[in-house]
Image 1 (cartoon, rainbow, N blue to C red):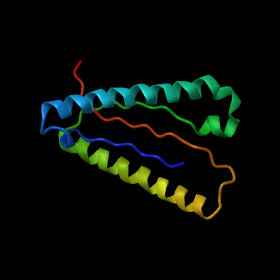
Image 2 (tube, rainbow, N blue to C red):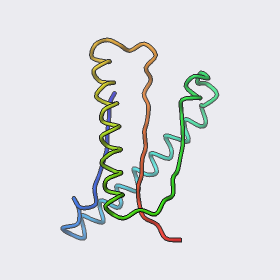
Image 3 (cartoon, rainbow, N blue to C red):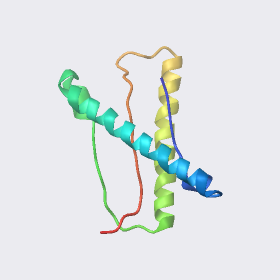
Amino acid sequence: MTTSISTADEDFRDAPERDAVHTAVSRVYARQRGELYEGYLDMKATWSDDWRSSAFSSESLMPLTAEELRSLREEIIELVLGYRLRAEAARDAGDVEGRENVAVQTYGFPFRT
């Protein structure tokens, strides 16, 4: 199973109703992502030490420009895509030993304090 969901605000700006749908769907995705991670936390004790040591959660707060955030987004997407393509090639070659489904969730958004 290899799945990727990514949306960009600019794809929905042409009409207010499309933007509202994008926001509503994004909220559903955010809840589902949270539930997926909470499910891992609930079952963490059932995973081996190796998997538990490899799993991570991080948050970085930093002052960026819109262009820097855009660049960060592109670099993260490229990095994750590389891992995804390698994983798919390994799976297609029959290399499934020790592989598990892994969720990588990333967000980058401005906020004010």
